[in-house]
Image 1 (cartoon, rainbow, N blue to C red):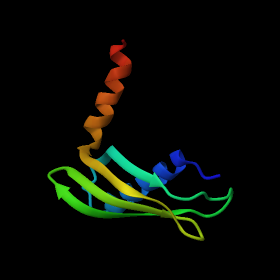
Image 2: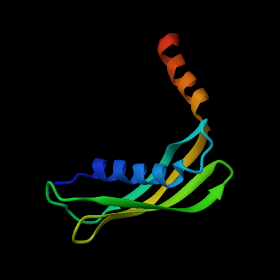
Image 3: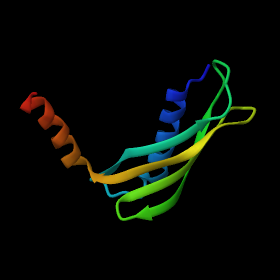
Length: 102
């Protein structure tokens, strides 16, 4: 069966793709919140697709309506928030965690 973690990942990817072409090259988005209902089961191997619609922009915060479908029906729906960040700065902060140690 197509599990909820896969559903969430697919919805996040749809949201990323929805805005990737309009972001400056040095910026990306990071997920900060997701509220999703997994509505129906999907058999193994069946194609699944997700759609994301940007519904609200507040500064750097982007809100999306997300939905997912298999070949028969809608299998998931919800909202997803992402924040626009500087990609270089984000990577530098993540790398600093490894070099600083616990």
